[in-house]
Image 1 (spheres, helix red, strand yellow):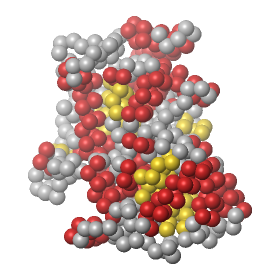
Image 2: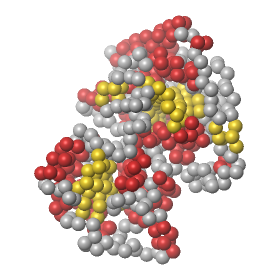
Image 3: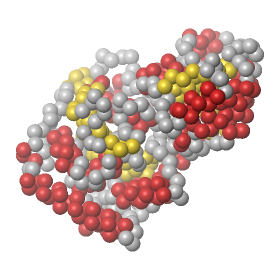
Image 4: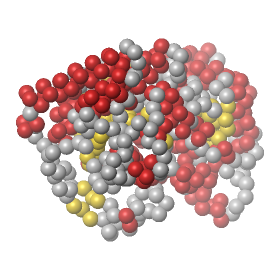
Length: 500
């Protein structure tokens, strides 16, 4: 079954990042599988209105006031009129939001439920429970996810975190990881892999005089471990004379990093590239031997998969979902502490010089582990489950659904009835529950007002672009994408769905 899907988030291209790449790649693969996908995000510098990306992916850049780190100012209700217009115009059936800190995402889920649409939320981050910012974020997330059809997390650690933060039934949360397009992150010398297969054995050792380059590519924020990097950088370079750094990224901690380099006179051994685009990441990665990722919190860490695919040995902190991402022979783990970062980096340098790490084999191994085609299939299964296409046993595999209902052999789905929605919101707290119910009632009244004074008949329906529908034979057996034999592909127009 094919769906009309709206991906909604504040975070999208041209801003680089893991959420942005996830939305684009997932949308592209869902389009290949026959679905219609649009993206709704806020306006970026030079990008306002409607844009078309590769594979006929339509992007709505809505002009809204941005307050912090590309997040729009939360207004709860002012986004509803234009959101409703886009949803009706594109005949959307499923609204898929991304990011706990995205105002557009959270508001869109609320409005979509008011409009009687199925909703899915994907959480890409980890949050605490004690500081004021986390408490406020968690309460808001509990409000929105009280009435969502399904939740997706990018790792099992992220799933546990989200279930606790939003008081969710674990059954309605799936763990579906990120992925990478391995072909876009090839090592510098692609012929090395076939050479080493024909002549197995340890790779040549690096002599003590060979330069080892350590790459760091990250947003320069506190949660990304920039303070750890700043503290460990001079010590690593002092202990290892034949090591140099390439650091790419931007953020508020950039000035601290620059001052550290100047204070220790490291300009000839540390190269600062500033912000880089996602299509330039591979060109930066292949210049190094080791990738250092000192993050303090991470739900998944797509960048370390990209680094391993480029043939880099990864040094990373053992936090969040990072231990789930790569096998141990590709990584050197450290505690999120300065001394342990220095020690782990030293172990990685020694292992490379001794020829103990077969980095030339990493690319093919990553290619077998992660595929966007597989991620799209698993996400499509979630859509089938919340839409009732799958039966209860097929979707939940016989598990108890708790408060969810299963009728007529279909999977359990949330009711759209206003009274049922109010019951779910009322249980969010003594005072918060009443406030949430008031917000839902106002949202419903606004929806009724728009239906009367801005009727659907006045909204022009967008025509669907002709696109290529892939048959099952067009997908390679390893699940990595489209096979080389494209003769079976056929171009056909999807029939316009009648408005219900």
